[in-house]
Image 1 (cartoon, protein in one colour):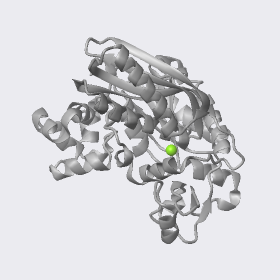
Image 2: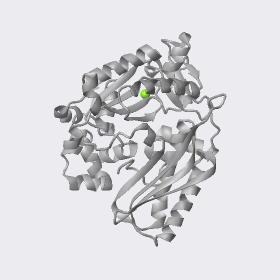
Image 3: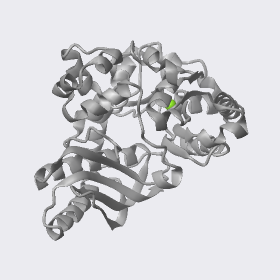
Image 4: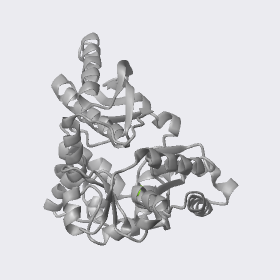
Amino acid sequence: MQASSQRTIVHVDMDAFYASVEQLDHPEYRGLPLIVGGLGARGVVSTASYEARRFGVHSAMPTIQARRLCPRGIYVQPRMSRYRQVSRQVFAIFSRYTPMVEGLSLDEAFLEVSASLRLFGGARAIAEDIRKAIREETGLSAAVGVAPNKFLAKLSSDLAKPGGIKEVESDHIHRLLDPLPVRRLWGVGKKTGAVLQRAGILTIGQLRQLPLVDAQRILGNQAAHFQALSRGEDDREVMAEAQSRSISHEETFAENIGDPEQLLAIMQGQVESVARQLREQQLTARCVVLKLRDGRFQTATRSKTLPEPTNETRLLYAQAKALFEQWWHREGGKPLRLLGAGVSQIAEIERFQGEVQSSHLDSTLDDIHKKFGEHGVQLGRSLLKNRQ
Ligand SMILES: [Mg+2]
């Protein structure tokens, strides 16, 4: 915890971003329940304004269900290119405070500000300045979390919503975390949440106090990771923009894996996540990248440029699989300690309607993901994301 407690990380998250941009651009929508999302039969809500949330409408809900809950709401299609434009303004504000900005999506970013504290008069001052600049320059509101690590910073901004600032100090971590439901741990989705609930673990405090062996019985490989989070520990670094202009998922295994079928299944889950992230942000990629680390900590990367940019899972996976099989045969089937799949050479898609034509399978999977979360569609076991 030594290293993490010396860091200061700010997480900024725009309030109801798509809906707020629509209300900004269309004054007639202000103060009314507004739902931005897919309007077709299989459409899903992207963002609901706070007025719409009072009716029980939330993001990831099928639009049909939202219409039943809030029949008099205003329903509009997302305008991605406009959201990206506002997003660029917001990210330009972040970059005044630190070069270490990691965007998680158009409206959300981590800022590593440890080195900027003195210059700007402390973390609280940075948080307040950023929130003020966003309001003045874009007319929108944001919630800001300040904490010694990424997990706590993200949790704090969530607790500060809408529009607030929440700071977590190192000596109050247990008091903050213990009473919260385990689902608030970053990465605990519906499935893991249900597993914990069946074992009688409802709060973060209960998970924290569990002996490791018991946690392992319930959570397997992930026990140590989630227990660290429950203690408020998270050593993941903020990856600055230049690095995060690639999207990837990787997993370190508790035990080396030598079964190629199992590795391919894991990789498929990773490629699915990456492709979905591309589609959600209306991006495409041209280059597929694999990272492979064997039992002796030798790390190899393999990459291949595609003839055309794409965000289709099937095409990206076919390329990743070919790269893996090449490596596997050349290296004589070495068991792996870490496997990661990702993409680079990312570009934005500009379409008139701001809608990309996704393959039918991909859109179906994306809808399922929106409804059921991270664990709904993953064919591979890629639960531990971005762990080094
Ligand atoms: Mg947001």
